[in-house]
Image (tube, rainbow, N blue to C red; front, side, top):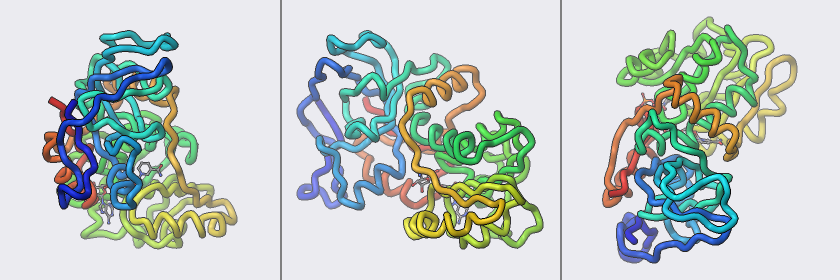
Length: 312
Ligand SMILES: NC(=O)c1ccc[n+]([C@@H]2O[C@H](COP(=O)([O-])OP(=O)(O)OC[C@H]3O[C@@H](n4cnc5c(N)ncnc54)[C@H](OP(=O)(O)O)[C@@H]3O)[C@@H](O)[C@H]2O)c1
């Protein structure tokens, strides 16, 4: 089969679309013909840190059609269209074929294309777990989403609206209209205004991107509010992990999220995509030959939605 394989020696960009062995599913796995893959920070961060998947193939968020199933598989059959997040199971999605466990997959909603389906898993699960599990979002909550227009942010806006919250986003001017069109009431252009210097206080702040001091986030929380850090620069992430608990004294909570692949959550999100309640926003589409370019693009931290690679 063809796949985008990590190859440090033969390409300065390390990712080469070439022939490689097709994976063989074991009794507990299905074999999927991959149609589309979306990239996440998990891909480029692993690549940069030298954490190379066993099969040397990146790509966790996949959409495709089941080709064959192992004898212990009961919930899928050949021909089923599926989506899944393989980040906890060895990646491998940037290929014509990938094997996966049942627990990583759900049926693709008919209403979404393979590309939209591939855009869904990791980013939408992260947004859901941040809002619902960490911040315990309630109807009417004022929510500030810092980095609202990227892969995670576009789902966070739509999910916060689904939970009937009042959403303010932070991004740059080029993405303001898009953020409003998917549900933000108000958007702050971070190049013009600094939300930490405004009077507004929020019940929930999601720190997806941007490097603001933790004390400024804390100041911007309403009493009883929760800040959830889960993205941005590595230094911001480490600071939140190290200092968050200290700053959580009083009624304000400063937390961080390590999102987990969860089949029930993915089923919930797929059913809401089927109903049109959430719609994956795709910024750019690339070919497998352009995988390195696609990685470079998302690494810049300014994507307007998800970046998808279609597998021919
Ligand atoms: N903890 C976990 O479990 C978990 C899981 C998944 C993802 N993540 C993390 O979540 C982050 C999400 O990534 P993503 O795919 O949504 O894309 P991203 O690249 O982090 O964010 C893109 C968005 O951030 C905005 N942005 C850039 N600089 C900003 C600034 N200074 N202030 C405010 N907004 C700014 C950009 O808007 P403009 O283009 O308008 O500048 C863009 O729309 C990553 O850092 C990733 O590591 C964490």
